[in-house]
Length: 159
Image (tube, rainbow, N blue to C red):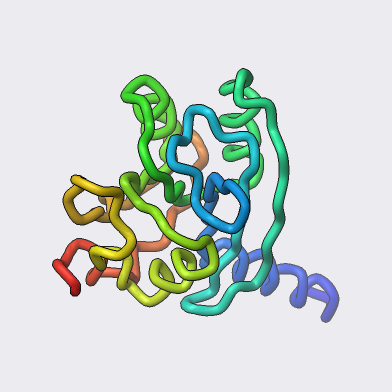
């Protein structure tokens, strides 16, 4: 195997170990309701370090385009505020872990998720219980094994 091929294989392997997160945004805050969001931030995390960030705008009237985008970017986790049960079901059927009832400035939410501190009350929608990380596994039909969550604290009560 040539050095270039080895380097490419290493890069592809490294990307598969990173966590891809999608977050609906309004200004610099998380959007309150996912179903009506039109701006999103896509983040690639390697442990606690942000390796990439991309902002995009979509029409909120097109959930198919939204789902296609998330699948295309191989999003592992969607952090959001409120979400309808029908959209939540579509997302989970596609193997995307959804952590809802989250609020706050986008950069602080990303940092809290990366550090396993997302359960803090300051990141909860009013009246919501602490968010928990869904179980992780294989994305249906992808054949790609997803990394086990490295954020066990996310389900604990944190002040």
